[in-house]
Image 1 (cartoon, rainbow, N blue to C red):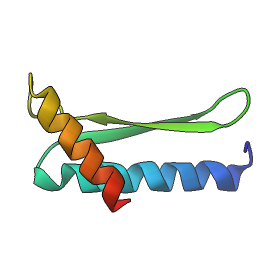
Image 2: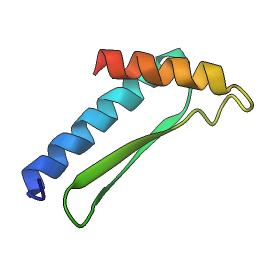
Image 3: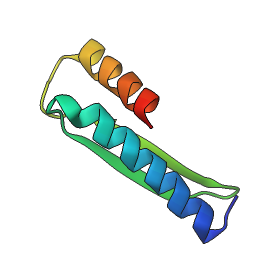
Image 4: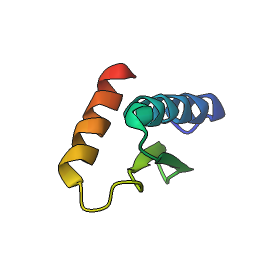
Length: 67
């Protein structure tokens, strides 16, 4: 789980989630890192719509469906 190719795959999937979530014009970013035991990644966003937690949540779930 710590191999470089695993990290690239984790980053690729996070990128797809961010791209699909941002389809409505939102701004989503990714962050990934190699932890002590495995690669991990996060999709962070929607900086364009402040105080819209439900909209951000919906967009992230759409992004996960599309990944």
